[in-house]
Length: 170
Picture 1 (tube, rainbow, N blue to C red):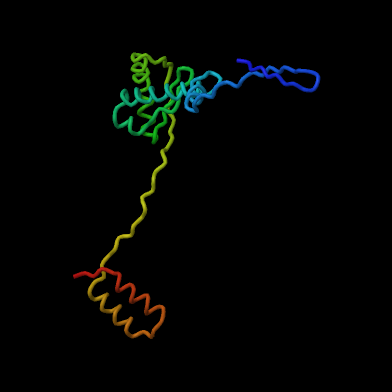
Picture 2: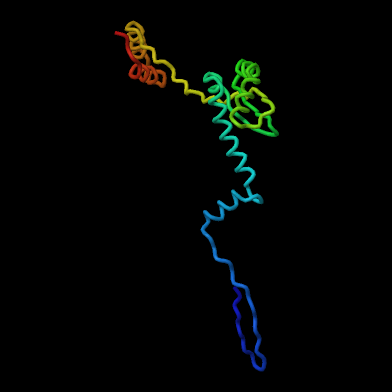
């Protein structure tokens, strides 16, 4: 669509033709087009979908104990790459590679081979909570006596706090 503007100046009339701006589409449409388009992230999105599908197939095909200790990492040129959480799991998957490849072929995946690499998963460290051990009656009495014999000082306050917080054996 072209807009025609007529501008009159003193002795001459000028006519300008300006193209109108395209209608703006919602941001979701343009993002969707970018992700689906070949010039955008279309290849990446398609590969991600393929990996998600293959990951599900691998979890179905692999024995449960091995499937939990490994994951599908990549698929390139017909080679499936599996990351195993330990050397023992990797060895077992390498032994099962021909069977896994056959199962993937039966399910319609063009698979020429299977590579297994050890990739230890990040472990979340559980916070260390020290076990609270109760004081024996004798130890409690001795610490109380020691605290009473000390002059007012940081050591005496620390002993009193220890006695107040500690659990006692009965």
